[in-house]
Every structure is written in structure tokens, then in C-alpha cells.
Image (cartoon, rainbow, N blue to C red; front, side, top):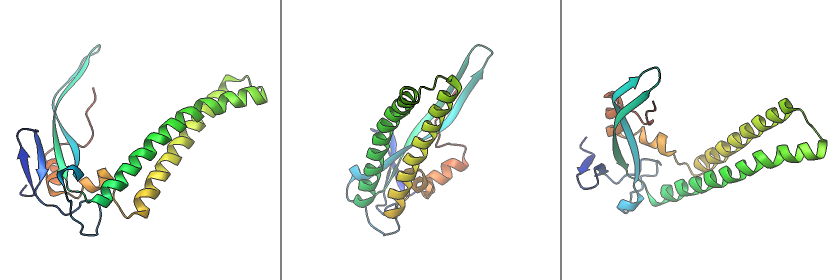
Length: 167
């Protein structure tokens, strides 16, 4: 873990190295603001009763060095994700209602199937746009880039997870 140091004030691991974790260009991160911080989780206690479920966990943030280009690409992906969510929610409700009004379909099963199809289409289109942006810029996603970091690999071996635990 000689690639990071622990910042006591901010309670996170900050990178010492500046080589970008998300591209193979060898570019260097220019400022601390460009770093990407991911959260890792370790379960402390899990309670599963018939009427009550609870999970207690530790969380630590790990800084990943990121060049300016990859920072811009990740920002673009985040903008398109948000835009896709807004358009998706609107289309999921507008398209079935339009079909109901235009074609006078009163079957609840058909409407439910249309709604489910719209959710699927919106999700696939959103993921397709994200993958296109990342691949056309030769940049790894934040999760894929984090799996290259030695400190993340070591914490995963020790039982930590990148996914937030749920009860």
C-alpha cells in the first residue's frame, strides 16, 4: 500500500502516484481535484430476524489518480446518464399513455408489457451510450479502473467490497 497515504482529516486514502488509472496514455493527474474517489465497504455485523433486518459496515474512500482527459470523459458519461434518466422516465410514462390514447388499448397486461419494454429499452440505450463514450475515448469506467489499483485489489482480497451492503 505504498501507492497511497491515509489523510486523517478527510478519512480517506489519497494517491501518491499520479499516473492515470483509467487510460493507457501514461498521462499524469495534474491536481487533487482530478482524482476519482471510490468507496469500499466491509461488513461489521449483520442481523436477520423475521421482522427486522440490519447491517452495519465500515466504509473507506480510496483515491484513484485520473488525468484531465479521463476526468472530462467521466463527467460526460455522468451528464449522459442523468439526461438518459430524465428522458427515460418521461418516455416510460408518455409512450404507453400515447399508445393507450391513440390505439385505445384497454388491456392492463398489454400496458404493463409496454411499460416493462420501455424500461428495458431505456436501460439498454443508456448503457450503450455510456459504453460508446468510454470506448471511443479509450477510457475505462470508474469501476473497471479501480480494479487495476493495487490497494483496491488487496482490500478485495481481505474481504472488502465495492458494492454497498444492504440488509
